[in-house]
Image (cartoon, rainbow, N blue to C red; front, side):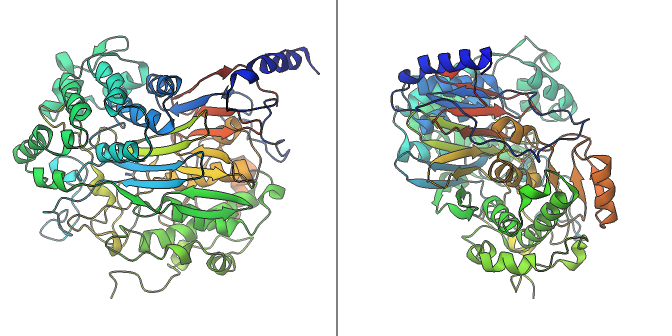
Length: 598
Ligand code: DON
């Protein structure tokens, strides 16, 4: 045993008794990693380059250190994981205004220590005056801007209703207390690098909307690192939510301000639309993957179903023996994704409007049928991969994710978004929050790609009161003994599903620790366009060449794919987490442990 290892064991021995109902025994990575895992030499995040944060009494991992600290403080005050999620959500709306939000929506998956699982849909809803052709011009062409920028781009926000519902069912601390950290932050934060950079990159766009410019470009320019950003109107709105709960947002002054903003800018959302909004508990999407139970989000997110369809196909192969990101592994992953997205794009939509083929799409029998069409040596052109479940209905960066586990073992995964960075760019004047541009996730016209290049069908057409299809995939994986193993999720538009499928496979198939699983290079294929996208230097030249020879069209991404925030529970019960090294998030543990025995 090395000296370091001996010291860390001593440290752990000292810490373990402090974890009252938490972990026992030594901290050990959840399993030895397969030696088939190697990353390309030039890859930006070599194995071992980032260390997970390990803790004994709870963990919060988000895209922002301040928000993670807010959540961890709630855990220290004996709040549970849902309390921490609520406080974290509102904090992110302040410190991460480009994605964190009260003007957007999202999905929450929870697994309580008593075994209760639930999933909450707080996705935005089309206003009642919305219509299927609202983004088409008189010639029937899709507008380049209307679903993305300005007042028509927004669905009725769901986040406040989502947090309210989650808290009502599972929360333990008083609601108003959970809003206090966000209110304090809205009164003034010190701008950090990531926010300064994104405000600068969006300066010209933010300047187009006076109410947005007044807040985010004070003195006519984006604040620099170290300067203060004050969001006084947002603080007031958060106070109304603290005092009035959900009604503090969906009724009275806030709803009136939304309607007034819409009138000024030619939008269609009304105070009545706001008053009508409800978050909906849905049966979680559950499926088995190599003896593990995966719990994720059902429609109106496509995330869980599409990931399940992919993994069910992949379950038929011994991925581990192929070698991580070997040509054979990358090929099978791509073929599974191509087939799952073909079905996703055709069938999936708001289940309250369109019957969903969920059970069939995630069944072993269907996976076997799809698998039979895969050639181990040749790419199948997407043009030859049709939706496989019969009649298609209608025929004849930015988002943020947070994962939280508390000392009792309650686990929460939340992905939330206003869609593009800074959403529709419209701030509700007097209420201080940005509205989403989630209407772009609907099919503006069947066959015409949206901003993520997704070619979707009529099932996902705009209808009054309908929720647009999402790719968000907040996910919790249980190990074969039924204990929480992984809590995960990410932004990334259409790539969310492939990113999370890879995280699950990295942990389950390749037995990677949380840091390796997160830093591993990612792939993406979404049926159309027929392109296998990979991160810069994420594949070796030899693998690329072999994949091209198999008939894949490859494209290297300029940037990265995703911003995954995961927690893995180690065998002794300790929580081990990393924020994705691709961006600037942070894992904050309660009862942090410095060293882990690998
Ligand atoms: O719901 C969805 O699938 C998208 N609106 C998510 C947007 C997103 O992740 C943007 N981030 N890069």
